[in-house]
Length: 283
Image 1 (cartoon, rainbow, N blue to C red):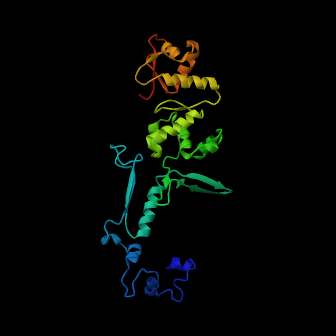
Image 2 (image 1 turned 90 degrees about the horizontal axis):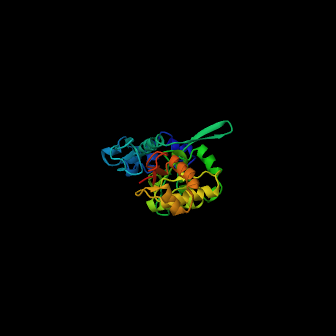
Image 3 (image 1 turned 30 degrees about the horizontal axis):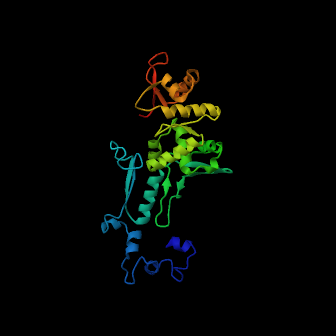
């Protein structure tokens, strides 16, 4: 009632501050005979769950985007929120907030911690609110993305793929699917577009790595050609790769060495071994 009066509402006009019953009737919390309405009972009752035991909010934090993603860990945090609905909602929000990464926004001499909710996938018949728990898009990453040419054409999913590749060294279809909850085919489409635009290098389901924009276009093209002929099942020698790509051994050695260092290709033997062959990583 204090909140209603403080808001400037005329709902309680003409009632004295201690006229509680008439005020609660005006607010539809009590009927004319003084019986609590369902809304009044749920909002103001000390324990509405006494009559409605299932009226709770189960706020649970799982390791991934699905309950069964990691069967060894049931959950990371959990709270069953009960009591009057306003309190239960507050408790649920607090549980979610303590499991989120927030960004610090500074304006002048003041700062505020702001979560990053995304409602972009909501439609006319349902609301989806995405809350980033892992903090991929921190200010440093946002600044880095801003340096990339053509960022205005990126979708949120393209930015997330690049951020994952930057943070982890590589990104795969599985990484993107687990982080964003996308269908695997959608993840492949995102990664294929970034490869086509020259931001990632890799094939199949990954792993993909960021391209080095300081290197020549020819070097990036050579990497793509090598990755295209390698597989995760059948190891190829450098001579096999040379025959398949039409490149010389001298040209292939430094490119293969870098692909191995970046984890995109696996070598089967030390560099000095004549039996050294190459496999696509991730098999």
